[in-house]
Length: 523
Ligand code: NAP
Ligand code: MG
Image 1 (cartoon, rainbow, N blue to C red):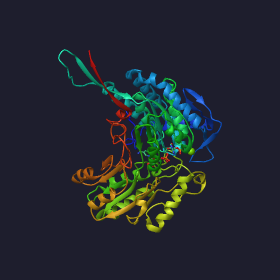
Image 2: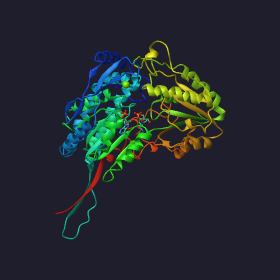
Image 3: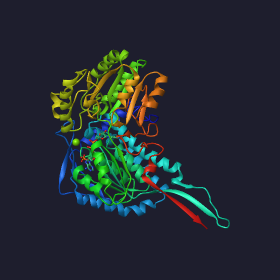
Image 4: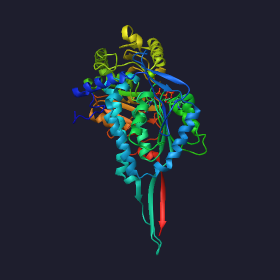
């Protein structure tokens, strides 16, 4: 397995050994079901009076872990711990900081199979997607370290402006802000907590992490990797509890110097507004939703288009911010493409995501499951189901939240569900007369995260030029709109999909966690 590099692009063809190791790890992880996990504040395990059960969406009888329902007091304690640890960590030479962070990344890699198994059980991700999320986290941390190193710690001499008789030196230095809050979503709980954490820490900030209530277990296992790598107490703090109370208390804390929030548009905008009520302007990095189009031209290779679209529409049950949720097709190839999409989708295996053959696992929780039924009821009034439309029932399906991969055709482009992020395995397909019409529709949403195109090489230039999206792909069978990897496809959104204009896992990301200081000295 030594020369196999796991990414979302290579995961379709893994070596056999990877499956064996995952299966072994799964048994070990299952044997620990129901263990209680603490919060981690100032290097200590902290319990709350109230607890909550973390159940699997595969089978809601499975209690994966018992977690702490933290409150405002825990939020404050975590902030204070991070504040106290900041002077020491920020003044630790960057070389030492990245050494410790690389150690944390390598622990993640060593534990990848157990982490991947836990992720499948908690999120409902199929095994390759779960292992991908874990490896991506290690790569994001390595990437942030590499960037700091390649830029010599962001300490750069500037021009000299001497007065005769005085020797001047000017130096630009990027320095950390202080205490950084990281609030993450359920769908990529490892990478979207660990990636921002790696960048914030490499930059010299101390952090407080709050995971989604659906995925606290896997994020505690991430916090363990930082702790076990030897990061000093208080540098990484981990708290759990409801977003509305615990999360809000963290956002409202005067101790916070910066925030990275990844999640829905509505929650992100609320946090953005609340955060603006502080004493002065502080940085906030928002990574929000998507309504990602895949455009198919009459010149497209339809085999590639069909496989790429099916993978991006239904990978992780459509619960990716980058999911292909809109397919826009030129009339001459519409019938042909739609036939292929149906054929491929009908072959997808739905089931326990830890099973090797499974492509689609369950959706995350009861509320998403209900949304699936409600959206399909609404869509049944407006268009036709090409595939799916129903939840799965019978046998194991009755224990979890399993939904059929659903393509809907003939819904007018004016329908609200062409605009709204459903975040489920539901994708609408529409027909257009030409590519200009396709582009107008593609860009006519509030979001601008990812986009895909299938067509001729000249058309690809036109597509890149016109599309309003932070991540764009052309003619890609691995996924029309999904499958970004740090260092290859840095990930971030335009418009309502993101605030910073700089993509994670890219050349300009770690700098977002630092402010510049100019040091002019005359000797
Ligand atoms: P969500 O409901 O917005 O929750 C995200 C996080 O915010 C959770 O940890 C949540 O905690 C917390 N939260 C909720 N209310 C809060 C408040 N008032 N103050 C502070 N924190 C609060 O999102 P989700 O359902 O987990 O994730 C799906 C969304 O994330 C989709 O919209 C998807 O597109 C987006 N996403 C974007 C990207 C990207 O890179 N652009 C990547 C992945 C996902 P609780 O769970 O406890 O409520
Ligand atoms: Mg759960």
